[in-house]
Figure (cartoon, rainbow, N blue to C red):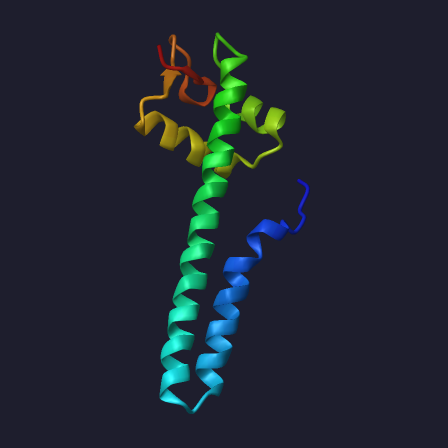
Length: 119
């Protein structure tokens, strides 16, 4: 799996680090209060980035399933999208909970269950 640093995801952790560094190194109450606000903003941005990343992965899974009208098994989705088993499992769970995807059993044992887009 390819790992690279996405420059769009640096601001949240960077702002958090600056806020925390300033909070721990200052002796001024006003600067401390502003540092805590800065760190909180950075944390919220980082959490939002993670949520957005999950949404992008879910969108990729939906697009893949749209090309597979008979459904696809999780390992097939992993291979096609170059994602880990855990990532695909989390995406499928979210999509199942939202009613976007359905399981296709057709008498198959659980490891052979397929997923397809809901009607």
